[in-house]
Image (tube, rainbow over all chains, first blue to last red; front, side, top):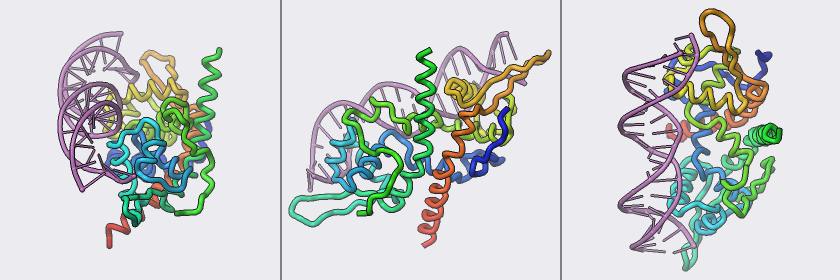
Length: 127
Length: 127
DNA sequence: CCGTATCCTGGGGGATACTG
DNA sequence: CAGTATCCCCCAGGATACGG
């Protein structure tokens, strides 16, 4: 067995099910869970802001259905903002909120860990 | 729109679907995805090592089915180790691997962000 | 004690079509 | 351009039971 290392938060499970008590980590994972939330956030991070159809074109493979659903949820959760612009043709702008921006860097560690994991996995296959 | 901040990794989407190209972040999220992977990892982090039934007792709500499936996947992914102990009665020890240990602290930032999000949400409901 | 086999259900997500 | 409505399929995960 490994020596115990600092994890940074409590790993003690509650007596009740973890799903009957609000866990911040599970909560965060739920907000960005699903197949398309992260790609949408990435593209907004990359371009600054974006309209509905433009977003649909850039996030390859997503359908209008899922795009609408995800955008609605992300907005309700305060990760993105929706702004209707004035003009004769209808125009809407989606952008990250401050809270949305704050989320992205927190994923960096996980990204690095995943990269390492992929490399180890790849090396094992080469043998 | 917000000023652009450093995210720590590339947010540029590939021309192909994100799901046709191996993204380390998506990969990491897949490894710990599902309902029970994190609770299992937490309990192993908390106790050091654990047998099958003991784990099932502590991770409240999980069934034998899901426990077996998750343990098998986590082992195949190199996050936990499975050791059969010598003796007249069968005994097995599950524990985190070094890679498993390295994962947990990377989730700290996400945990903090989720905590903040819960607090903001709660404050909004009080109004 | 350590699991596996079977059966079943809910909902996430795809395809397609339609509206203002 | 910015979405909604409908239908359908698949599989993660629950319930239950059984075997080494």
